[in-house]
Image (cartoon, rainbow, N blue to C red; front, side, top):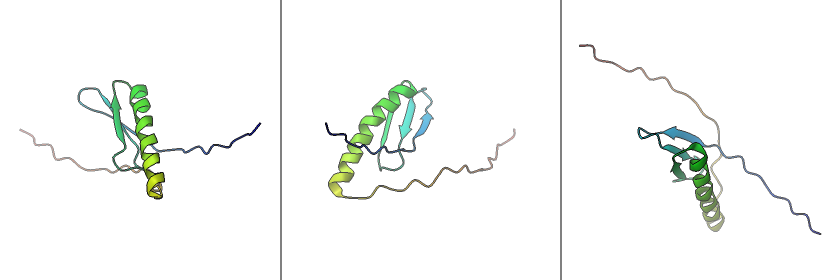
Length: 83
């Protein structure tokens, strides 16, 4: 019996919700790695398929993945007009 080792990637995922309550998910390590779904679970399931395609493409190109550094939050003042 052969025991194989699998490498586990821990990928950062961004989750947003649009004005129609659709969940939009993205993996910033890959360009164009986005998907969506009616629930977070559905969106993540769809994103898994896109991530698999991105990984296959990276293997073909022999390219290195971007390195995840972290998240930051930025404060931007909004000027709200008073009437």
